[in-house]
Length: 197
Image (tube, rainbow, N blue to C red; front, side, top):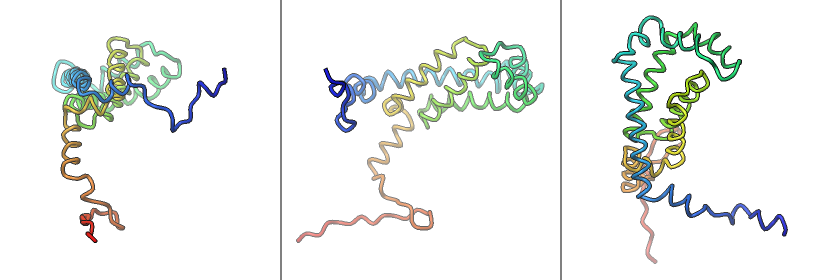
């Protein structure tokens, strides 16, 4: 059997039907949207606790005591990450704690509303990555897995959300109504009607 039989030309390859169903089906879109909204609610809950709730004092006050304590006493996955935590995060814990609290809240809002879904999912994965690398297992790996699923299925997982609404609006009102002119501004495109001979 030749190797050519296993490899196909790129233009001849097709997406497996199962993957197409998982990423384009409206029924699966409802499931992915439910996961997205749930994950968004979890991030909002974490962000609200840091911004206005019980964790407020440790994050927005006391020079980011929660982040400084976590970074200096956590067990990092790698020694180079430990050096980063001790050399950069601990001395800058004040503004990093504020950034973490705001980022968690905004990631949650983006996911829950389905607004800028891919960006929110990527930001969530990055936050989860930093937490796991810093020695916190908790729910972070599970959250990261769900965020990756949302990222892969973002067209259907954001269909029930603001991204879906914006896409539908652009499709109904013609996404080509405006184009950039030579100077970088927007100019209305004249709709031309075909001439009948």
